[in-house]
Image 1 (tube, rainbow, N blue to C red):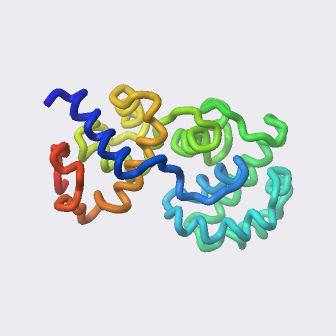
Image 2: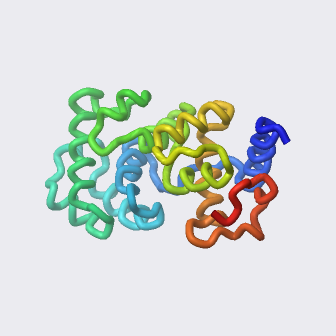
Length: 209
């Protein structure tokens, strides 16, 4: 089977399994998704969703976060790993949003990655889900599944992102990222992948790796 045909079949199956996928992080406003994604680094979305309702109830605007007492902010996210550094990143990014972007979340990768705690992964989550700007999100699930599916041999997230951007049609970038994340959580698990139940197994060159 030609590689292009194999990728098309992978996309077709993922589209069947996960129709119109979106981030699992709960948010209402763009800055809420931005800050939730900062919190999600080395932490599950489920855990983040446990703390953000109280967080967003207390701090409703970007200005609220910029002016927050750092210790109070830390208390609200204490159950999240690396809560001190993440609280600092959130407040710093909020202040930058106020100073440079009039309190609005910018809509370009270059501007978003100027914010503290925001790398390409976080920026692409916000761009794709909020602003519908296509981007490939490389988290731990995408990294693992892209390797197992033979779509990359790289381990560096930026290089993986570049590899996937070459192979996957641009219109699919955001959805494809979410689909790999969902499939990684549900089936293609890190320690014990459920290869016997995977609908992609016929297209997977590294089953069980």
